[in-house]
Length: 168
Image (cartoon, rainbow, N blue to C red):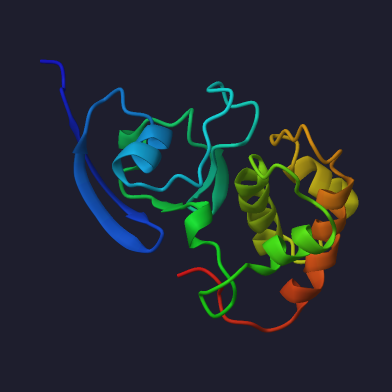
């Protein structure tokens, strides 16, 4: 018998989510259409642009390539969960991108921030080469990347200081 829906139980931005999902429902569509989390952007739909980047168990993944049921038992973080140290305002990565002119139209920014957060959580003082590698799955048509890279280099000072986990 063919399954018509799957049970999805996961952590989404620190909250328990439990629901039935069709087998063809992408994580991207679940987040945007069912959960109202529109910060994760649709782009290429083939995993090349990074606009739909989310963290799954702390690793950056393209939500357009994941079926929702594949997230059973996993922890998902979207751009909406990435905030300042007090849980409010901009995360230091976002602040650094603003300060360094690392955004213009803003469409790619959520994916860039998610990718940079994954990198900085793992490597608190990344090199330029590590930053470029971490962003290799993210496309930006506006900035030319230099402001984004400068922002990533700038934020490493935040990660060197003791601070509470900025995500719930």
